Amino acid sequence: MKFETVMLHSLFAACLLVCALTLGAMLTAKTTVSNVAASQAAVAVVASN
Image (cartoon, rainbow, N blue to C red; front, side, top):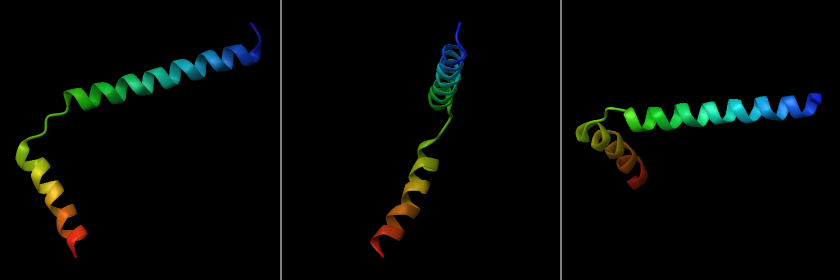
């Protein structure tokens, strides 16, 4: 194979791995409602001032 083809295949594999890890982290994250509400409350206070 050409060098460019090998580089494109490895880049595709790396991007696919990053996407899979990111999706897996989002799906398995354990967040409670109070944590989400507390993090959004600070943004709402800053935005309203």
